[in-house]
Image 1 (cartoon, rainbow, N blue to C red):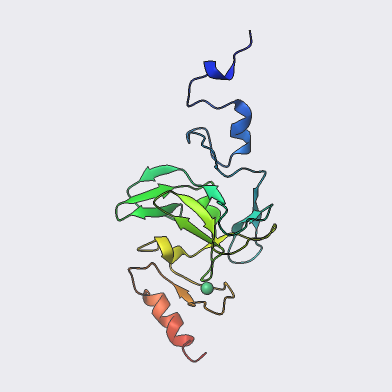
Image 2: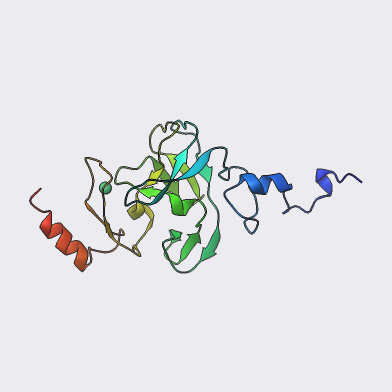
Length: 175
Ligand SMILES: [Zn+2]
């Protein structure tokens, strides 16, 4: 017997869709979710670790992806902050976005959509400014994004540098 698409429960996508999405089965599939056809996880071979690379170009004004995950109340290295008390746990896609002080991606946390900050070419690593969404970072760090506007030491938007950061900034103040 052939089951037509209309016979399926509304939250169950055809099997093939799961395999192409960055998201596992617990995340209901939606149009615009990132797919392996458009993005790949790559090891940067430097201190940044794993990153996300696009397989195609995105022009400014063209949505890059609709983000999803599991809503949680606490931040972690796997979350993006949505509101003062809500965070999106997305270790599958958002977690892989690298930080840049001059990122090529911005996340609209009201719609959970990622948009280009400028034109993005195929093969580019996707980056966001962690301080654009996070009040407090689980781990502050010295940035090597290479931007002329690099802040050097990266913190959340509502916190100052920690002890390690203050020492780092003092060491690098003369540059
Ligand atoms: Zn930087």
